[in-house]
Image 1 (cartoon, rainbow, N blue to C red):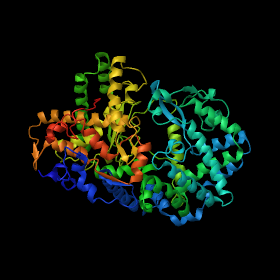
Image 2: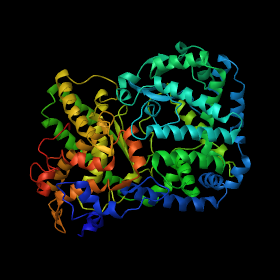
Image 3: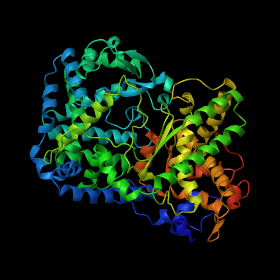
Image 4: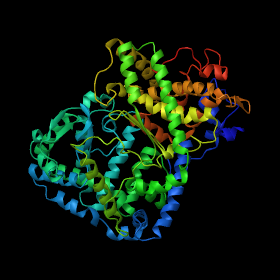
Length: 640
């Protein structure tokens, strides 16, 4: 077996770098030196390579489907590609909503306009959806959550870290130009008023660290107790007044009511118009799309607008994903692919069971509850057993109408779950998605087929590579979320319940603080540090997943003596850590890295490698790193 056949990309390794000094530089050094970020992307790496392969495949499928009128995915794609028709439509697709906002004269008509936008699946002030009931995970209830900001996070309105002040300036100038596209009259004044209301909302919204505590975002009530005019919204959506609902933050909800009663009518109208423009721009003509792209350049460092076909592929994947995904699965995840991935999942889950028996900081009552949770942890692999049906009409000539139809279909599909038992087999990602997730209220992890592709996973790869990348970086990572700072708040059935003893919880919090302090020392870009608290859950999952999958691989190896112990001079233990690191080989724009540091619960790729490696007990022996070297520092942090 060669290194390439094993699943390791030898050309990405910088053999001049010291693996004990900077493992990311060793595993990915040559990739970083030679990779060029495409001008229409904010990063280029292992993930983006697979994403592009998937996009290219779906592009071919959709081009062929578009040649056959009557194909739902083909018609949707054709309408998206019809730029002439989109230009001809102008702002007609959003004019009815703009007219509705134009009727606002007082608090009552303002509330009526907000309801009209919510019914049309826009989210001014708040977002209405469904969620599992934290108190009874078998049931689905209504959810009213904070929303309505145009910048990525409330801190962009309130803080001056890094380039935030510059980003605010770019955003405010962008708002003016968007209003000018609608009507040049008073554009700056309208943009200023809309921004002022967003800033007011930002001051009242919860920050992301607070929201990591599910107790802070669970305040159940019933719709009838919300009072008018919000009961009217539920009535228009055919939801009974006795429906149970969770208001994530009652104080914020009170602020919305106060704004509608006391804020100047002009300010509310301009804010609502801005919400329509901001959410709809990409469905309109070129001038709107180009102006909307200004913020992507600012926040992500993307130099060029992606080609139209790629944007349309993402639309079809997002809005008809399980229909388009059937072709993807047939071509890219057929045969024994699912069975092999299921077997790998079971092996990593078993390693967690062994870990629970040996974990020194967990007392016996908590250990038994944890084992029960692990035993009930479900997993979805590859694709749904039953494909979703999309029962809305698709036009071959009206792109914006298709987008609205798709979004309304999905909104009503979600709202229809309220008051009913939970469907544990409803996927949150489409099959071609290069990602995975763990849902604590389901106690369930999901691994789409898009993530189970080379270089992350291959049927003929060396087992150490599959365990290191997919086993640790994906399966082990998602599984560990069941026991991270958020996951520990939910029991085996997905109910929010305190199932940890105080002594165990105190030791867990101590171990978690070590992780938080470690990552808070890292910089995303010079002068901008990671938020150790915001990223702690993902960092715990990264560290735990890699450690557990390594134990799973060792157990697998004992029962498979035929596994090669060396490949081109690399031991299988070294292959394990190399495969994990190479899954994060990546080059990002500085803008993307900074935005990630401010808003993303995940650490940047470099620190998802080095921040994990320094805590792995098996790494030092594998690469013969002396104690006290950067990657084998001696003092380590560990939760799982």
